[in-house]
Length: 383
Image (tube, rainbow, N blue to C red; front, side, top):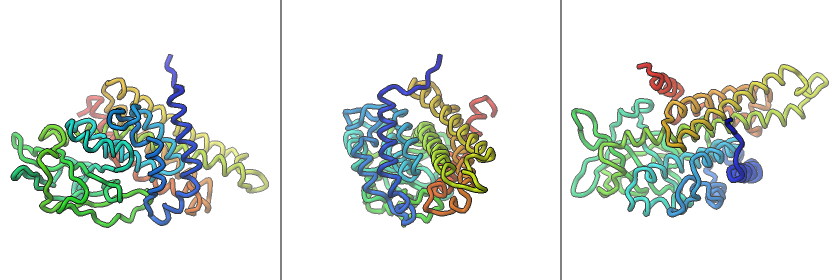
């Protein structure tokens, strides 16, 4: 019989991150959010806890854990705040994981220790101003010249790309043609490389305490050995990274959905209307019951996707299901939570207002909900 109980090690991690989120993040994150300020102190504490090294081998300074451990941490962080959670998610699954999965031995030795320790952050440069869901429509180019890649182009909506501790971005670029088709490769571009420009931060609807920028490359030169993996396989590599990342984002979405339940349970036990605590009214009870249902079922979806991933089984469909289910749960729960809070739900001093703003990007980032449906349909044989 299937057992969904966490073993002692996973449970200890979950509780540690839960306590950190409640005691360290919750009291201060609202201020960072309203100031649109990156929370360096909180990120440093997460680094001290080893969260950035969770799924990486100890030889590179990692914790020797697995991807499911990362997901548990993301869920607990997102129960309080998604900006902090996505900083960890992007730093691990998008910043460091491409180097871990596809990098050379030398690239791993050079970059992974600082990324695993949280001393440095890496970014993932796939999306372009003219290519979001159609990520294969890459226009950024890189030509090999005198032992260097000369890069020209731009990337959009890149997380963790402009902080004081960002050390690199791994980008996709057209490096030639193969059988009349674009040859897309992945290349590491260290921060501060001449010709690499980070635009001012975006003014965003949500995730206001996370770091997001547009990037530009103008005759930006990096050594030929900065190629990650096999030439011409960069797009395929990034798609596999996104399959994993969708499981992580699903965990984040579940955390947000569960955080809405948490906040509502506190509120309805205090708020009075028409002579009773509002939690005594069946309309409120049923709404919260539906919220718990959504969070619970979305959690089961990401648990299954993570389990298949760790067993080495195909998990593309399950990752897409988990991502779609969790983003739906996050949007629906944040809408209901805001309604339960009434006018207070529209105020920034209450977390549910922040949750509502943060939920929408979960239906867009790392594959839109429409893309998830497309992937599920394809895996069912519908083409």
